[in-house]
Image (cartoon, helix red, strand yellow):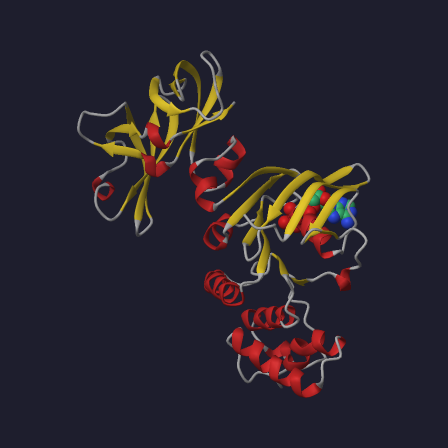
Amino acid sequence: MTEPILSVTDLTKSYGRTVAVDDVSFEVENGEFFSFLGPSGCGKTTTLRMIAGLETPTSGSIEMNGEDLTAVPLHERDVSMVFQTFALFPNKTVGENVGFGLKMDRVPKAERRERVAEYLDLVDMPGFEDRDPTNLSGGQQQRVALARALITEPSILLLDEPLSSLDLKLRKNMRFELKRIQDELDTTFIYVTHDQDEALSMSDRIMLLNAGEREQVGTPQELYSRPASEFAADFIGDTNLFRGAVARTNGSTASVELRGLSTALESVRNPIGAREGDSVVLSVRPEHIDVSTASSGQVVGQVETVTFYGNSTRLLVDVDGERVLVEVGGREGAVSLERNQSVHLQFDSDRAALLEA
Ligand code: ATP
């Protein structure tokens, strides 16, 4: 593997007694789309601002291409930042906004004009040079902010919830746009969001943060299929968290008795090395539970609600007082199910995630 573009080691930031970022380490590879994901207040923005040079770490180090950034002032760091609020200059034209960084770098006017046109093209706003940014839509303003941040060709672009002030439809379109622009330029993007769909759909890898600490780093698929903790399983996607105890272990798998459901799951992968008698939590995704009206399956329950989502249907099933969320894909199957109907559920042991209680 090549040297990472960014190495963050034991990074901590305290504000008085509040520890905003708590001993966090991670590496970002060159050209990666890397996201910080987590609930409000988990330290995403503070981490990003320390990389930008807008905040000073309390302890720990940030290295870019092997060089310690601690003493490097923000304007000398090879990074740019895009903010949630766009932060465009209202008294300058779109062209002046986009060309601002080049002007600061004393790039001659003719070249500046050419590059502004090139970057407005990149963000799909050709010919907007003379427009007043305050008359543009939110989505267009964000594109201008993006062009302004990218025109100086930073090695890393830092993006702090850049889509959160846009409406849902626009936000979804902009995800594709950001991904396309990142692919085209091959620039490293570090992206802050609390929106798991955004992180899952755009990122090469995600760092999940919880209360200032690193919870898990991995690809979207890894975080979804192999959550490392109850927090990770719950935060990413929807899941059922069943409490239970290990009845037996057998090599790398375990047999787990589920307390509330009065059933057991055999041959569950056991990456945490749980032992017989240990209390554990089992995360089972709604789409990894089969539902049938025939008399086969592990447990029997009553359908409480049926919710149609177009490409899937979700059921809430009451099993001995425990609620189990089940998803049936496609248009078939669940459409015929009704409230109060008895159904049999079968859990897919291969895809269940065994977690520490
Ligand atoms: P959000 O999505 O709400 O911005 P976040 O994950 O980005 O959340 P941070 O903004 O990094 O979280 O904040 C982490 C913690 O540090 C929070 O408890 C916050 O109140 C605190 N904090 C952040 N900046 C400051 C500051 N300048 N002074 C004091 N406390 C701060």
